[in-house]
Image 1 (cartoon, rainbow, N blue to C red):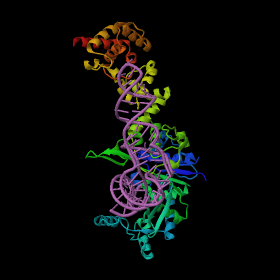
Image 2: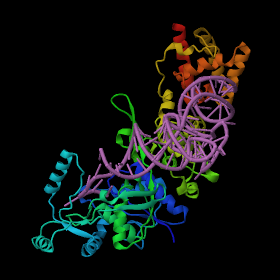
Image 3: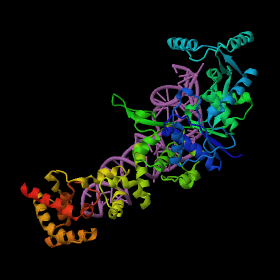
Image 4: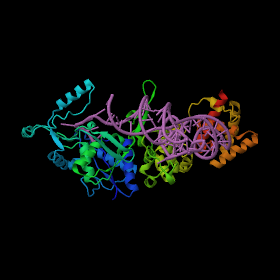
Length: 492
RNA sequence: GGCCCCAUGGUCAAGCGGCUAAGACGGCGCCCUCUCAAGGCGCAAUCACGAGUUCGAUUCUCGUUGGGGUCACCA
């Protein structure tokens, strides 16, 4: 039988990287076995409706390189793929269970349930529904129904014994049935709860492998009880370890907790906006909680196709993993280094434009920037020396390793100016001219190069050597700055 | 708190009874080098603890500790 998995996000307008990784693994699980990947929108909570939120889902998947075979936008044989459009199909299933004595109407008011909770909180007792309506007489039920008393439908959970199920990652999980409460299946507004809709949809859509976060580990027996009630096959479960974030609390202690907004950018688009490439993000999160094996062992950089080939459920780990921005940074840098000139330019252009970079410098800049940036946003900072000459401190001219001092700098620049004024303005020529000047003066070439570069750039660190800096600045601007440097040195 | 799950360096992690316990990020050092990167080489750093089982435990069992998750008419 062909594997079918699904991604069932709820349209909140925000795609957390944890959810995205779940989607990725669902996608990979299906694709690796040449199966089908389904997108279903879970919007059963009318109060949470957010305009345009489904577009966020589509845009995320598209950018992330995850393609679905069935979904609201492309259809399929198991539609509709939006839960609100399937609203009418859930209740009959619940009523069938009521008829069979596996579920029941509950007329308890919100107030009663709240007071129940409060009481439980006070005494520190077990929380949960007290099953007040589980055994109402038929007369009471009929009367309430006739009086149009609002009701929900609750699952009649097993009370005694224990339930065991198998998970592909965590193995056999056993839970005492007394831990299970009578969860609501159909809410007072007639909509199904997430849990109920999930079971009905997964079954009616033929989902074979349920891939989801490990937070569902302890509620899975309730799902299974539902499958059993209907006499349906229980799907294969693949629960995923959670992604954690690291933060520092008010005492300066480092704490690890479930990744959330307090850990910085945890939304997919947050990261994209900060300059992380979608492919790099996917590559990185694929490796969070899963390790490749066989021919792919120890590999760090994967294209989506390679992930599909390499992905294996056996490589999924059980323990939660911490989201490491440093490693993401490195992965992003690797992607930049591997980029084609074309793609590189497309990404870099907006930043080049801030400095009025002309096309004749594109090739040089690609060479200079590729090894030096891990995000394109850093180009601005790398090229900031081009904007205007900083009012730098003259001590910049002193550099021990280059054997450069204030005095030697004056000397070097005085000699370099006429040479630069007459040299052909290209990298090789400039480098050669300075090198031979140094030779004729019988000094290390750094003695000339250091001060010239400092005077031209006005900063100690530049993304390239003298010749590159001079080329980027242009002959006129370079000489202007170098002469200013000489004046300042002399004036000291 | 009850229940469930987890436990190898700072982080991601390989390991699935016998290894000098891989690899990557980060850190540090050296080399290369006209600054900074990139690249090359190298170093430091891990089996939470205690009992078992076994000829032998990182690996199996139990307990302790620690961490996480979950206990909604949210998804």
